[in-house]
Image 1 (cartoon, rainbow, N blue to C red):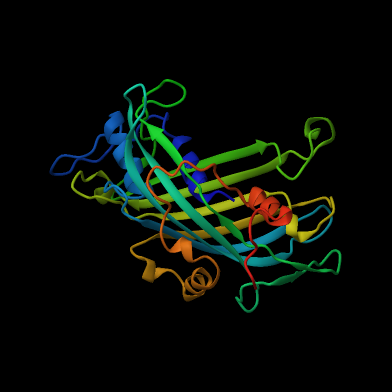
Image 2: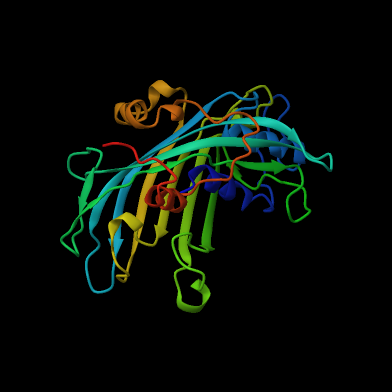
Length: 300
């Protein structure tokens, strides 16, 4: 799961929509139709207008199965964390933008006790399987005043009274790094859908004097079984339903997440460095790296 990247996609997916009518208020406002202002709005939601100032998204929810001919099963709970920072950039064509650099964690937790899982009892196979939590480092991306389609970026959210929101559906279909060279011929292509809703205070977002915008997020993912579940090609999908927010500081994340970071992921207490050039990590490439030994597995 690339939460930071999908936040970016969720915003970008609606950038070309028509702007909603904004209510009149005293003082100047950022103009969503202006590419420079649109970048500022996006940056305020994602992180901060101050270069290299850390921002954190935190979320939690539940995971269920969906299979033909049987009731959905509550498999486990999840808790997520993404720490990021933004910095201004200019590309070779002279277009201004910003780069977001981030790291993210998704923990799988016992649905009854809330404890971070070490193993999970597969209800279909009867096997106790080892759980591999998500630790994606990095998850980075760039955005400019002009998009890949050659059109100026444009804020496409909606404003109603004191609130703003964005909603987006993002279908995912790409080669699975765990599958072979003949996915088009015999199957195995990764297939998922991300469903996002973001909400916040319109006055705060549109105020040119504020450096960041508070945001709540609802995230749902419909996807193939996770590789560590050892489903061996069984029919069905899983769906994850979560909600969360951008927290004001590291102190506001859960004690569970703090303990996990201290014990297993100490580098995740801060974002990657500005200009981080590394290729992005996904939950599937992370799993592959653990299995082939190129990434060290956390000792649990």
